[in-house]
Image 1 (cartoon, rainbow, N blue to C red):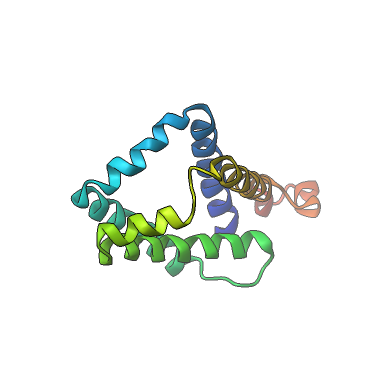
Image 2 (cartoon, rainbow, N blue to C red):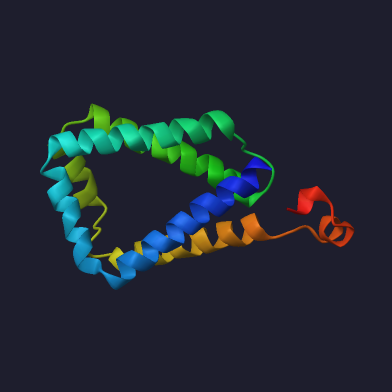
Length: 140
């Protein structure tokens, strides 16, 4: 099932990134360096937009449980963020990130992402009890 694949992929990615950000907060100073380089912002936007488009095209499901909705929501947010990076000038992006108070709420944002990533991992690797008991391919 596509939801389980994306739940595993996005959940593992989120948890690994969050853990690295917990360990190395100084690396987040690179966000300012990113915004100082318009070409890098543009390329980042292109890749973020491609990821968002791929998820939206392949998994645009607003029903089917919380994991399915989270995967779809992630796809749409990635698509919007990619468009934001490509379409808006860097000063506008900098003001947006300042409004989020990333430095002030750094660990709160990380905790939310860690919980969401953990939930997606759980849902992605969880097998349904009936399918697992029967050894059906759906359990894989």
